[in-house]
Length: 346
Image 1 (cartoon, rainbow, N blue to C red):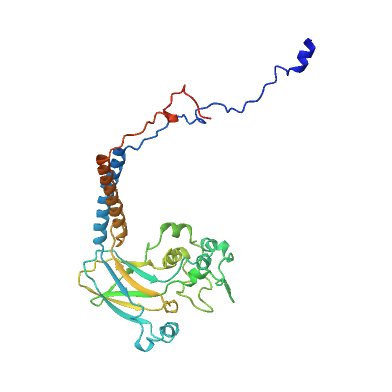
Image 2 (tube, rainbow, N blue to C red; image 1 turned 120 degrees about the horizontal axis):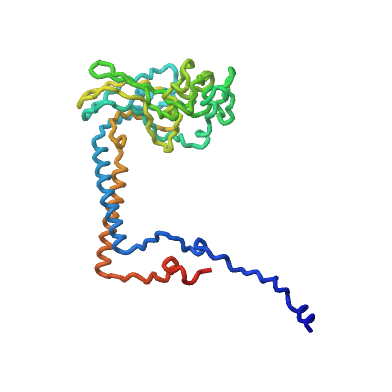
C-alpha cells in the first residue's frame, strides 16, 4: 500500500512554477516620485507666471527691433536699361552690355556703426534637394579629398581636370558687387569675420585652393582667386551655408563708420547675377543690429501673444472656479498614495 501511494504522488521536491512576478517597488511603481496634482489654484498661478514673464520679454524684443534702422532697395529691375526692359534675360546674359548701375539711398535715421550690408534674393530655392546635395564637403575640408566629387554632378570636371570647389552650390556663387560713397567720399566695406567661425575652422581647409573653377562651359556666378585658400574666401563660405527658405539674406560686408540721418549714400552696383531667368528679385539691405539681431517683429509678437493668451486663460479659469467651484476628487486610491503594506497591482 505504501509503495502504491508513493507511485501515485509526485516527488515532494518538484514544485509548480508560479507565473506571479517577483515583487519590487520598481515594477509596482512605488518608488518615491513627485507627482503633482494640478489644482485650480496651481493652474491659474502657472498661467499668470508665464504671462508675467513672457509679456515683458515681448515688449523688450519689440522695442529693440524698433530701434534697428533698415534701408531696403529693390534694384534688379531699376538697373535694366530701357531698351532691354522687355528682354531682361538678354541683357544679363550678354557680355557686351554695361552692368554698372548707380543708385542713391537716403538714410532715414542715424545708423550707428557697424552698418551691415546684406543682399537679399527672392524665389531662389537653395533648399532644393538636388541643389543642396550638389557639393563635396570632404573636398572642401582637405586637399587629399580633391577627387571626391561623386555628389557634385553636373559641375565635377572640366577638360583640364577636377573642379574645386565642385557642385552647383559653389557654381552659383553670388557675384553682384557694391561700392558706397557719401559726398564723393568712398566708404570702406569690411569683409572680415562675416562668416561663422565654425565654418571657417572646420568646413573649409587652409590647404584647399580653387582649381578649374568657372573656367569652361556655362558660367554660373562669381569667380574665385586661385591663390587664396578656401578658408579665407569668406564670400564663398557665406554662400555655401544654404538657406532654408526661398527668400533669404546673406551678409555681404560691414561699413565701419556712422551714417547720419538724411545722408545720401551713392551705391555703385555691378549687376551681374542672373535672377531674371527664374523671375527672382535682388535687394540691397543696409541695417544696424540690436541684442536680438536685425529688424524682426516676429519674436516680440510671439512672446506677447503667448503671454496675453496665458493671462486670458488664467482669468477665465479664475472666473469659472469662482462661479462654479468643483471639489477635488478622492486621490487616495492611487497606487503611489498607498502604504507599502497595501495591496499590489499585478
